[in-house]
Length: 317
Image 1 (cartoon, one colour):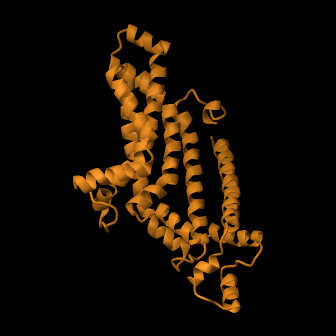
Image 2: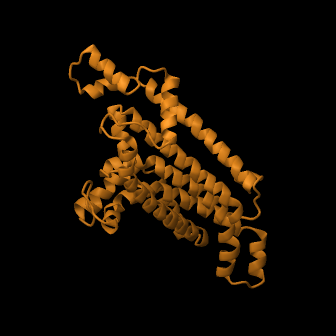
Image 3: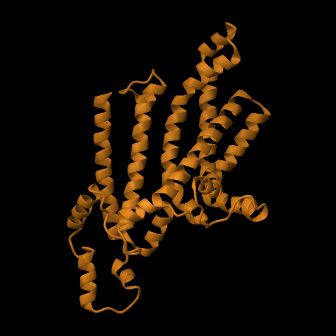
């Protein structure tokens, strides 16, 4: 286990290193000059432009800029935001809570709703199964921004049950209340996907020979489902669920922008529009790191969930 963990950790660090360079190079190769944003359209002398470029190290070679940025990032220093005129680390810290609460809330909805719908569809063939398939098909095909518009129109504008975009909630309970519609908008597509994966895994296990033998021996149906069907179905469900959790982290920008949630996703969208290179690089790198870490945790948990898998087997690839 230790050797496997160290190997996966080394691979994680390699992925982050390569990704960090790709992100850094891509942002700097994009068209446009951040100096024009810093000047806000005001005319400036050549000396002023040169001073700004020197302050933000824009005249250094790309590899030199990357080495300086990477050295600072390893110490938690991602530079200074040209748009907000403050340290990027402090800016990320002020926005991190909103994204963590939104992703956590959505992950709970995906896990509970997706698994419950998949289990019901597998155990109740017929009308209920068909209804779940139709509902999950619609949910899977609905983009998050469409869900956001529909939820705001119905529950905020027409019914008035939840507040619309914006607002300044105080306290954990009020913040979760404000995040209810964004969480449902973010979770809809992923819950539909997880429900279909759960249904498929459950149906595969229900057709196993040992399940038929247990039923023939008179074992209670609930016991068979709990011990032999649901437990053996957790492997693919957890694996796909972990990937979906990482997907939630990546797709928060659309929902946060639609609901005006002060999180990392909306910060990324604003920074891309403003060509705030330092913030774009930091948010993108954090998203990649979170994605890789989630997949590492899923790989480590897979043999614990299903002992039939080994750390060197295909199940953990």
